[in-house]
Length: 433
Image: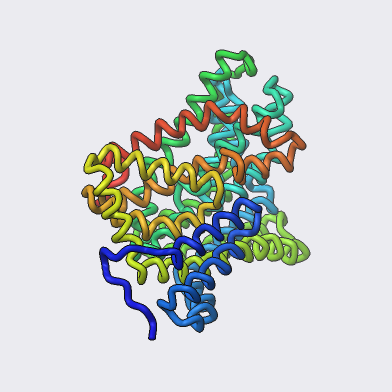
């Protein structure tokens, strides 16, 4: 017989033992999908709450979702944009738009990251694509190499914050919320984070005098850059326009985006058939990391649900404090700590079902909670020890991750204030409800 745990029951060593083992393996650097797999198997074996046959079944059923098809398609779309060099056209438009500012190139770099975020939905792809283009030019303008890398890493965090975002697709699937609704709700918070990073760079640049030259705004130059980026801009217009107008779902929009990007590449001669194997390989490598995590984390979530861990967590927090402010700050600390040691996908799959009941207990709307959580987790991309974006730009530049992280501190602080604003001003996320 399988044990049944009633709400309000306590947990014993059969729960805490596997959890402690998972933490230890994580600290030892074992891949997260292995940690989740071993920990979940141990948890099911010791507690006897669910049959072990669910391990195999859930690995397949967990990723057998129509909504998840959008993830590899958005990744492939971003790869096509990079291969066709349309990402460079986006950067040209950003420079033509912001070239009149004193911190022109730095601001243009962050804006370019925002443009690319509207296509790829992935921060790592954002950092890799624009880092190759902009970092050498930033250094030529007078920025120290580690700070130039920090700008790109910070700007690329918008990859999961500005729609379409893979993170919002996953959290929507996990909590049963429409990805289209989350995309619309994320527009203002995503743009707010982008503006925060731009303002931070302007302040740091003025204080340290990295970039002093600037040009006057030229409408002909802007028009030329806009025309040159027309094909690249067509992709996010199709993605977001189709979703918000109700013509197609996020998954369908991802399919249309891939076909559009490939058609543009072939028609303009920027994409060759010989490019396809490598593009598919790069996209498969990314999806090969995400897929197993989703399948195993969903089983782990089922086990926690049967054990009534979400209800016990709500009760524990209620016993600790009844202050809405304290609970929000407590959730923020959890998101920040988790973002430092795990990637966004496992964090969402594990923490979202656990903390949504906590958020609801203080009257937080589920949409507001999703935006708050994803934005807070975004900070983890530029904070050690994980800091995925830091490792991406470190690989591009050869600079140590620690040096880049040190120069990213102003951006971390600025993003933290933005997250607090999103947490305590619900209308920023719920304006479209």
